[in-house]
Length: 123
Image (cartoon, rainbow, N blue to C red; front, side):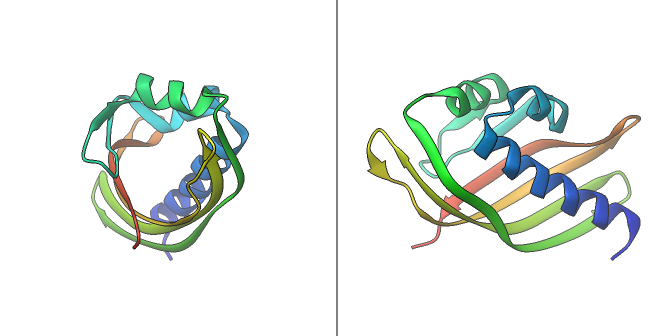
């Protein structure tokens, strides 16, 4: 794994830890201000909406980890393909399972930031 791939792998693991710990301040440094996510239901979610959802007291993760990870770097752009394993509840509904994600990162002067992401639960 080269330097960029290692940096991105560390960043994705940190991202997941931030979600589990509700560390939205750190997520603001990982997600670009124009970050957009497509949820499993196909709805587009802005960075601010995503940060608010992480703070929702009805959301609780007992475990959240990256279990598969691949990265492709194209200059200052990278595509990360991975799978997360979650154990959690939202509004008393079990949301546990594996989630496949695709995230595009862009390298800025201060480092890599996520610009778009899509996730879907593996059935």
